[in-house]
Length: 74
Image (cartoon, rainbow, N blue to C red):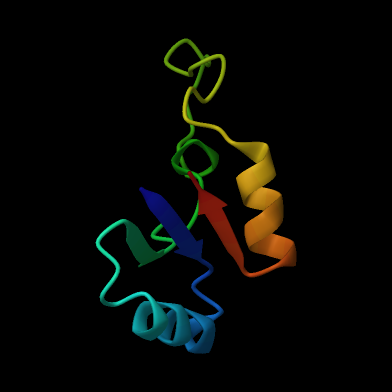
């Protein structure tokens, strides 16, 4: 299974990839749903509720989305 994640700012690229891979059962094209980091919006008085790290963090994917407008996950 291949997963293309396309930046929200790249709607034309999303439409193109979705059209090209529409009949491919092993390829999925989605828009990046993230708007902002939740933890960046939340404020905690003493910080005791904060997680030490984001277990779903994939910095290389974030960089690809920012620089290329898309990322590929295999």
